[in-house]
Length: 164
Length: 298
Ligand SMILES: Cc1cc2nc3c(=O)[nH]c(=O)nc-3n(C[C@H](O)[C@H](O)[C@H](O)COP(=O)(O)OP(=O)(O)OC[C@H]3O[C@@H](n4cnc5c(N)ncnc54)[C@H](O)[C@@H]3O)c2cc1C
Image (tube, rainbow over the protein chains, first blue to last red):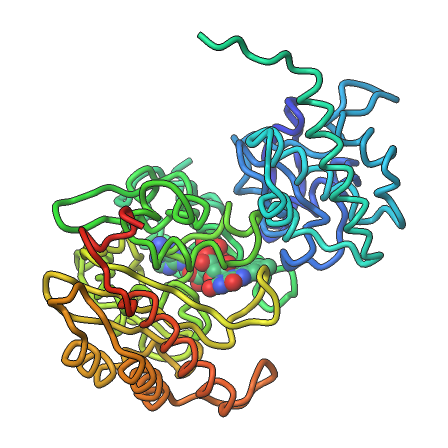
């Protein structure tokens, strides 16, 4: 079947797909976007986290053809251009939050999703936000440190609001 | 080309959904996809056509209707776990927050939990304890079924061909509610047991729903009657330690658990007793509940 998706703001035509293909499969195998990782194919690991409209979901559990007409945002679309990083990506580098790297795209998406909604999460909110992302190198300490670094840097960059 | 002729129908009203299902009786009814896509990815299901419910406005969101809240079938756990709905029906909010992970809760729906009808479906014992009513629409019109009648067995429902769940009606009750779930971690875990306890201060009743301990969600009727009779309603809804302990035992006796890869039947019975006692002690605390007794005055 043939349908059109909107991925990272651009229309992308999908041709010759099988009805049951997941959004993850279509992104990786048909649209050349392998940033979303394929590990469990059952929503357990979070490596394929993408934003569908305004929600972070597992791309492996989205029927690709069902996503037509919606906006899909993947890890490839996060930074503005080649060789630039978002603050979350930079903090992952600075904190050494990447070991084998397989879980990293999903975790970067989850941390962005959390901090864009909630600029000052407490420890529980932070841990809950990444509870759907598995890191089998078990590097959670550094990942949490990276998230906290982003919170601090964003707070420092935002001038205190004047009280009325 | 009519929408129903496409392999993926994206209807925008319940009428269009029913028409699409009439045109394609074998179609896979898709909501959040968190149960279905696992099956499709694993090759256990090969859809030939799909009718998606996610574009249907009538099925999204929730509303208040007098003494009830009406939950659209496509309401997600993310919409239930916090905010005004979680304040109105705390046990449902608590259950929603234990489901899967944020990514799962952003997609998965209450209609899908009912459609799958797994013994481990986390909303089912809560809906049973709330006396929630499932509304369906189909070729023969709409029906209303108690959750206990909607779920007919392990992954079996009373849905007829061409029928869908449109909403769940949840009566609002004044009084505390509690949901407890046992599993191996706090996130991403299929329940070993679940206990939901709901107090109705006006009717002076207690309702208990148990999950993962029988093919269908269980109501612990004798435990409920015992708690209602022995609670001290005049002193502000109090249960003594003896009542709390006996309530747990009676809940455990209402179960018929099995041994499986997640737990043993013995452990499940024991866990139900502990969780049910703990839940009752929270909803009918020894110091009593004063004022409205609802979650808002905590
Ligand atoms: C990683 C992971 C973790 C999970 N954790 C939990 C958990 O902790 N607790 C829990 O209870 N569940 C859990 N689940 C299971 C699943 O998320 C829930 O059962 C969810 O409610 C299913 O909803 P859905 O909208 O995704 O359903 P779908 O997958 O879209 O559909 C499920 C079934 O219901 C049918 N259906 C859907 N909507 C309707 C409707 N309106 N009318 C008629 N039939 C309908 C479908 O045809 C299908 O048979 C988990 C799943 C995953 C992948």
